Image 1: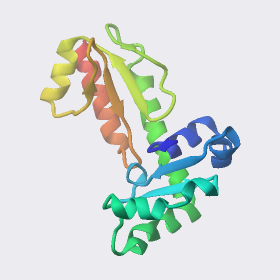
Image 2: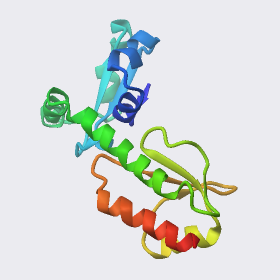
Image 3: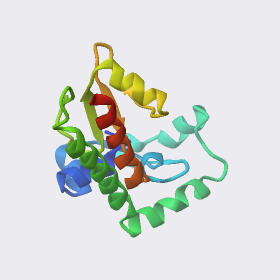
Image 4: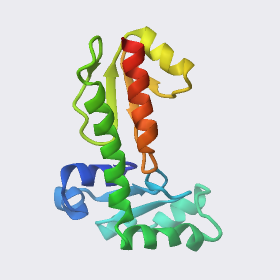
Length: 172
């Protein structure tokens, strides 16, 4: 399982990590740390020990073995033991929901999907999206239209409100 946004999914679904992974049949979780506030690092969890055989050697051969791995691993202790990983995920989700709530009724705009976790998918006229870029906002656009706004563990509520205000003003 690609767990880059694992915390956001757990927070959104209100389920335990076990329910999301091994109880659902997942064999391996690659739990991303950077999208949850860590500088670097991912935790690889093998729920089937047989699949872990030789993994350390494969990592070394691929050049993915840090010489002081304990320094990359240590922040996981605080992130997990304090529950910060889940609070961080919930904060990103709350930020996305705040934006969606502000803009969902703006004429000329439409949410492509309900905001379920830390993403807002917006269908907006080109003038709105171009105007946002001119104001310095960065986001991904899809071929055929639509834009994706992602919210991380460190999203500032004031910036989310400013993004909503800029979208509202440009759509007016």
